[in-house]
Amino acid sequence: MEKKNTRDWSKYDENVVTRYKLMFPFYVFEHWWELLQEENRYAKTKYKAPKEFNDFLAFLHLFLPYRAIEGVLSALAEMKIIPTSLDYSTIWERVRNMNINFPEASDELEVIADGTGISTTRGGQYVVVKWGKRRDSKFLKIEVVMEKDEFKIVSAEVTSNEAESASNTVKDLKEKGKEVKRFYGDKAYDTNEIYNLGVDVVVPPRKDASTRRGHPARRKAVREFKKLGYERWRDEKGYGNRWLVESLFSAVKRTFGESVRATSFAGQVVEAKLKFWAYAWMMYMANLVVGRAKGFEVKK
Image (tube, rainbow, N blue to C red):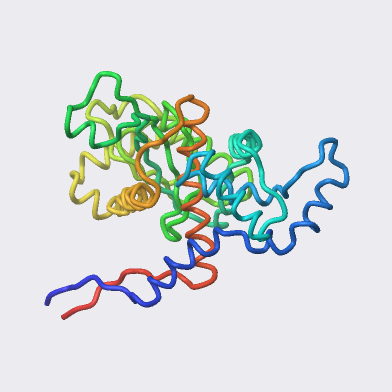
């Protein structure tokens, strides 16, 4: 019997449209002066625009450089949609220094971790295809932890050590009272640091993994892997779930691109994280309003 993947495309289309609609802060536009009055009540330096407006600026920055955003705000002010515009320096400072946080994780969850590269080469893939990869081609490695069942981003950090970053994220979740039941990752996460977390770890061992050294749970996992073999281990442990994070990477890069425009390292880090921040909130808010349009299998 043949199986076919499908989904409720009408609901999916509504979800996608809603993602972008909700990123435009109409609430802030409507309540600009009330929000600003409250924020300026005890502020030493008086703000010209509410802090809630920063999310809108950050979202625009994923598509437009700062000078272009200044032009957009000027047009909005002229049309009386917002009462005042902001200059280049103010926009830059607000986006660069904003607090990048993600929707709250579920109380009980399984997490998937993986790293991906964000290009800092301004020429993009065209240059690579035409001229080949040059020695000065550079990437930021950004490590993402996501919820398996909710397809929700928990964290996104630029790092050179995925295992350390993921371990810190899981520790933070536990400190907040969240119950992390299972951790999925590739061989990069086959470390004592991950097994020290005290959660069920689904990570294939490295080729040189020992059954005599390291964390007891890691030694046990290596023995089990060798006994079952990869395919049986993969099926019994549900390791195929790890590929959900690859779908997430693809979705984020299709939406916001796979490179950053910033030339400074600090700017590149912010811009790379903003891609995942924006996608996380777009998905979270649209799913609350419309609901998820999950794919499902039907038998023909």
